[in-house]
Length: 349
Ligand code: UFG
Image (cartoon, rainbow, N blue to C red; front, side, top):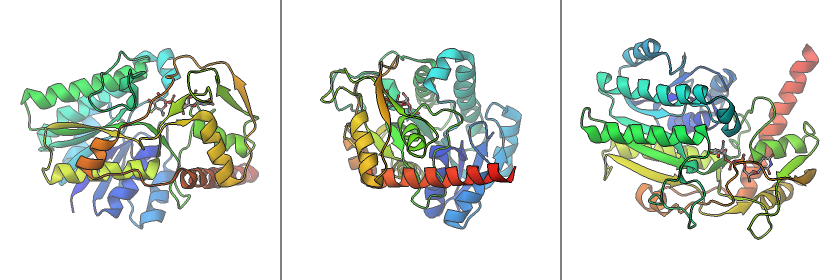
């Protein structure tokens, strides 16, 4: 069975991807330092698929530790590199942490890959590399704009490092770079989902935590933008659909179907949704009201961005499939489950 090493495999997108990889017949090795996720992900993944992934509690900054892992598993055919810090605001406060984690982590991985004859790398990138695009929807050949945060800059730098290494010919490396739009939702089983530490930064966890009563109200950051209802527009992609894009990418690499040694794909629905529309979609799907108030704009927010996902549709044969109301129902199911479990734990203490 082909082995796939997944860094950051206990995290939000990582855990959903591990499930889909296992469903597709791959043997998965997770490398994660649990800095922003829980060890419970392993048993949750096992509950969904019936298969326990290998797990190595390790930081990607630990070169020697990674070397041991690469040596221990002899059939690693591809690596999916998720492990990274991802909070935009925090990256402005702690740039060194972000450059170290995100850039050095990738450097360690690509330094070791050729030593173990591993050719294939799927890299977790972001639509943040496009900044505020001049034309919408964004295609893969839209210009890369100067990053607006250290986090965004790390994604750009990592893309450039991969490009240079692949093109250098110094080793036989191939890569698929997936540029995610806004991943939301949870697994339909309710077993895995997004688990933000502290107060959520992102919209959907904030909506679900408000709906369940953990937060008083959702603050909508600005309704005076140049959009139909005045709130910002994003392309919200279901996390299970996003996870499946990684499986397709791995398969394409292993079957040596790449047309270029490095390929870029936008992973989104192709549809722009405003903040208000998303709140309404949640309320409609779940029947639960979300208390909200419009406040000032959040610094650094892009006004509108959505994907042209035609390349992923045609070349990868991948499509966003899950309807928004189902994604919202899954996010809500997960919130209820996590909240219930947390309350139960508190009750026992
Ligand atoms: N928003 C609110 N209230 C909130 C949270 C968000 O109104 O409490 C609005 C934001 O202003 C924005 C939209 O909801 O208009 C989406 O915001 P998110 O924070 O969910 O996501 P971003 O589009 O800001 O994307 C950021 C990074 C991406 C990264 C993504 C997920 O720019 O690179 O978070 O981590 F992929």
